[in-house]
Image 1 (tube, helix red, strand yellow):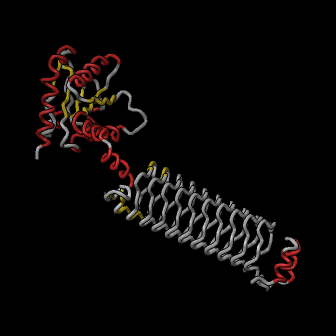
Image 2: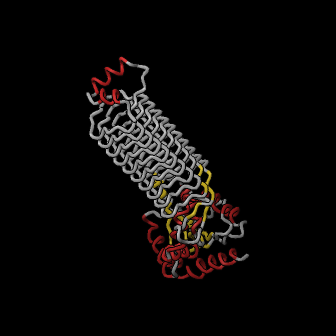
Length: 414
């Protein structure tokens, strides 16, 4: 039970209380089990006070000093704790539902198994805090500092962690279902066994984080940093379905869609069997040749992808062409007037032995010296020379498509 003298002084107001505290510096106030609901205690000096099981619901504790205070099982529902100093405080089993802790200092505080559901902790300092088993569902932790915090088994369902600093935090077996981790920093954080189902991981830093045995069904992954992260047994299926696990967070959402979406499977099939990469330098004078090649491929049920070396754009050419080459059934390289294509082919051809390359050349032009080197590779077909566009059109299927398709089938054989 509370000390009646201590409680009586506090009821006189913050000014009288702080004066009394200054006059009795060694004293540890005993305010346990007191009813201080709706009380104005802003700027109060409550350092090391015993407030166990106290009723502080709807109280105004803004900018108060609660350093080292014992608030075990205290009721702080709806309390105003903006800017309060709760560093090293004991809040085990405390009730802070709907409380406002914006900008509060909870460094090294013990909040084990406390209820902070719906609490506003925006910009709060929680470095080194013990939040194990804490209910933080739907809490606002945007831009909060949770450096090295203990969040083992914490409930963060629907929590807003936008821009939060969780460097080195322990989130093992935490529930982060539908949590918003946009642009959050989880460098070297431990997420082993955590539930990340439906979480927003857009722009999240997970460098050197531990992601083992996590549930990631429905996770949104874009622009994520996974450098050095440990990724093992990431379960991509809902809890009521048989587990399917992968070891790469970036491909997890795609793999689930692939398994459950026939349209996407059809797209993959199209990419692996129908895409033809066309390389060339198609100036306005050669636009008709480009259109002819594309149209002929379309009539044969192929999907032409054009890379025009006359307009390389801002991205690295070799990187772009290499990516496209990986998707292709075969490559058609029109060498007419394209000075840079031989250099790109010198990189592509050795790297993709399963992708046939069919070179084309207007017969009025001389062959490049590098062509002799290219033809040494079995997957490079002989250069097909055409005299003009009508000649190319009439012979395209027989002299270009059919040889390339036959070569692709042969290369695909075991």
